[in-house]
Length: 482
Image (cartoon, rainbow, N blue to C red):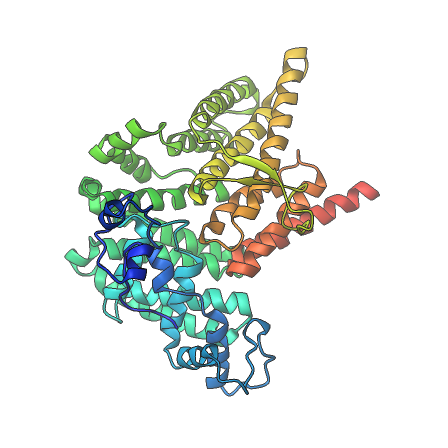
C-alpha cells in the first residue's frame, strides 16, 4: 500500500457521492444546502501514509536471503487463497524500503490526533515529503528515522544498517544546504536538523549518545538565531520555533543543564512578535516562561549561587514558581477520570482508572504541567524547614502533591499508547519513576510503561531509561530487605 498519492480532501459525504467538496469548516456548503450534518474531514496524513513496518521487515529479509525468520503473526496470510489482502501485500513488497519507512515515520511519529488544520505542522511535513526531491535532506532523514524505528520495534538489524546509510546521505545533503545562504534559512532545513535529533533519540544505545542528541539541538539553536525575528512573521515559523524550543527545554531539564542565553533571547523575540502576542491573548502565558524560571533556580542551586545556607531563599523561589504553575493550570480544559474495563490489563491501567481527554494535545499539556510541578515540589520538599509546625505542613503538602500528580500522570498514560504523541509521556513517566516520594509500586509501574513505549514505538531512550531506573529500584528494594 505505502504512499497513496493524491486523495480527496473532501468530507465523507461528498466523497461517497463523488462530488466536489468546498472543504469549508465546520460544515461544507453541499451538506449545509442539503440540511445534512457534515461528517467532517479525514486526517490526511493517515490517509497518505500507513504503517506497513511488518511488511518492510519481511521484504528486507527476503532481499537479504534470510528465509528462516518466523513469520509475523499479524500478517499471517494463507498462501492458498487469492484474497485482496494477498494482492495488497504483494504490491507492498514491490515498493522501495525508503518509501515504506516513511509510512512508519508518519503513522508512528508525526500523525495528528484528529483532522489536522491545513497550516498545521504534521500536514506541512507530509506535504513537504511528497513534493521534495528524493535526494533532499528532509526526505532522507525521515526515511532514516523510519527505518531505525522499524528496526527497534521488530529487532531487524538489516534495517538498522540501512538506516545509518540513509542517515549519512541525509547528513551530506544537509551540509550542502547549509552552505547555500537561501537553503540555510529554509523551513525544511530547520526541520531536518530537528529530525536528526529524533533519529538520535530513537537510536539511543547508551547515555554517551545523549551528547549527539544535544549537539543537534545546539545546531537547531544556531539556525534559529540565523533566521532571526523574521521567522515569527508566519504561523509555520512560530510553530517550528515552539516545537524546537520544547525539545531544547526538555534536553535542559533531563540533563540538568542551564538554558543558553541564545534561547532566552529568541524566546523574548517570539514573545514580542505579533504571533506571540496573539497567543498570549488567546491562552494563559506560555508554560515555557515558567520552565525558564525553574531551570534558572536549578542552575543557581547546582552552581551554589544559592548555597544550603540560602535554603529559605530557594524554598521561597520554588514556592513562587509553584504558585504560578497552579494559576496556569486553572486555564487548562477539564478531563474525566473513569474506571477501566473490568478485563483491562493491569499493565495498561493504573489502579484500574484512566483519564479521558478531548485530544492528546491537551493531555500532553496537562502532563507537562504536572511534571513541572513534581520537579518544583521536590525542591520545596528538599528545602522546607520541618523544625516548626508550619514547615512540617509545607513538607507534607509538597509530598502529597507529588504523589497526586504522579498518579494523574500514570492514569493518563493509556491515552498515549500507540499514538505518535507517546514521545510526550517519556519525560513525565521517567520523573514519576525516579521520584523517591512515590511508593515503589507506582515507580515500577511507570518503568513498565517506559518499556512499553520503547517496544511499541522504537524509542530506545525510553528502554534505556527503564533499564537504568529498574536497576536503581532493585538496589533500593534490596537495601530495604537487609
